Amino acid sequence: MAIAVWSSRFATGIPLVDAQHQSLFQAVNRLAESFREGNAASQVKESLDFLVGYTQEHFQTEERFMREMDYPELAEHMGEHARLMERVHGLQMSQAEGRPVTVDVAIFLADWLRDHIHGSDLAYVRFMKEGAQK
Ligand SMILES: [Fe+2]
Image (cartoon, rainbow, N blue to C red; front, side, top):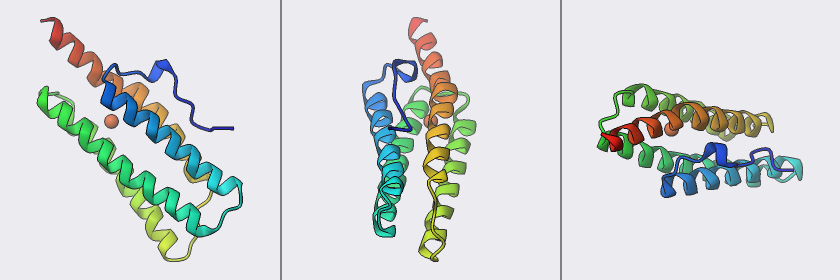
C-alpha cells in the first residue's frame, strides 16, 4: 500500500507544480517499498538519492514561481525547503557512513510533504490567485 497518496486537496492548479508533487509522492512510495521488500541498501540509497535530487529540483521550481510573483513569505518558505534539504542531506551522510536509514524516513517524508503542500504551498497559491484578481 502506498504511504503517500495524492488527492485533489493537494492541487495547486499549477500544472508543473502538481505534476512534480505527484512525482514526489511516487518517489516517497518507491522509497518506502524499497524497505518493505527488504531490498539491498544500494536500492534504498538509489531511491533516497533520486528523491533528494528531485526534491531539490522541485524546490527550485517553486522558489522561482514565488520570486516571480514577489511573494512576501518567500524567505520563510525557502527556510522550510532549506531545513528539509538539510535533514535529508544528513540522512544521506548517515547512510554513506554505514548507518542505515529506516522506513521511518519515508513516513517522515510523506508526512512532511502532505503538511507542506497543504499548508505552505497552498498559501502561495492563494496569494497568486488573489493577485490575479486585482
Ligand atoms: Fe514548497
